Every structure is written in structure tokens, then in C-alpha cells.
Image 1 (cartoon, rainbow, N blue to C red):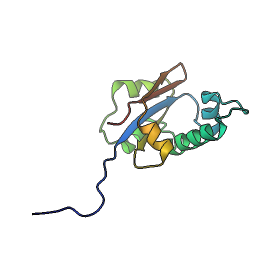
Image 2: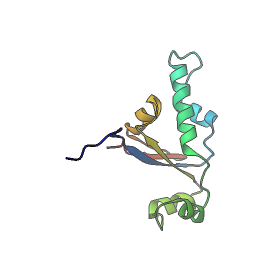
Image 3: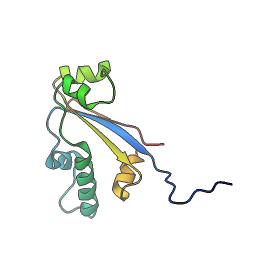
Length: 125
């Protein structure tokens, strides 16, 4: 009989796309969250903002750059339209193996759309 020794992981990960008319700096994300300076959740919100910002990396500015960085050969029509409309595109991933904040983001559905910001993220399995 075969037995398995060692750690078995039951982790999941989820990808997300963000299209933004301006670069997503920590200050821009903070303004989107609407965090007042005197919030009792200030430290938690800062940790969420930092984790979010670290996960997005640098913006993708062209379709060619997107194709180079993406797993897919060709972006779908929606992503092509984002570039035509002047959006910067960010592609990221969260994993449940990471700390509490990244785990929470991975397991939370976050979808949002306005004239200057689009977030598409379905929570991990």
C-alpha cells in the first residue's frame, strides 16, 4: 500500500483584471476605498491597500504588451476595447496560501465598473 508523506495543500487562486484611466498608485487606491484618516479600521484598510497594490504590478499599456504578458494568444474584444478607450490594464492573482488579507481578497468577489475604473474578479473556488 502506498502512503503519502508530507504536506498536502488545498489552496486556490484567482485572477483579476483591472482597467483604469489613471495609474493605480497607493494614494489612488486609498481614495477609491474612501478611507477617512480617523477610521478605527485604518490599519486593516492600509494592509488591504498595500496587498492590493503589490498584487497588481505595473500597468499594461498596449495590446501587444498584454499579449506578451498574458497566457492567452489574443485578448478578447472587451480587453481590446479597454485599450482603445485609453485604459491601463492590470492583471493580477491572489492565493489562499498567503496571509489573511490576500486570502480574503482571493475568496471575495469584487466586480466594479465606472467611467474610469473597471474591476473584474470572481472569487476562487
